[in-house]
Image (cartoon, rainbow, N blue to C red; front, side, top):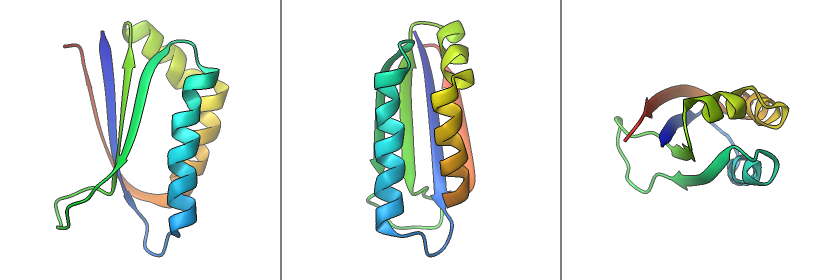
Length: 96
């Protein structure tokens, strides 16, 4: 198993509509990328300077399947959209 976790901070003044659209687009990847076993997107519910605004957790059978996902055209399209909305990003990849 291989897990890929990403956290982002939104740029100032990003609308709730765009935030929701980002979540929908990310979650929609499960339909177009067979290598993706599961995907979860959640908005932070705690305030503070150290917190990120949204987190993505994805699960794959192995690192090769993750790379298939990372390079997939559907993923790249969503990445382009997300980059317009966010200012900071943190990533953790691990094999439990």
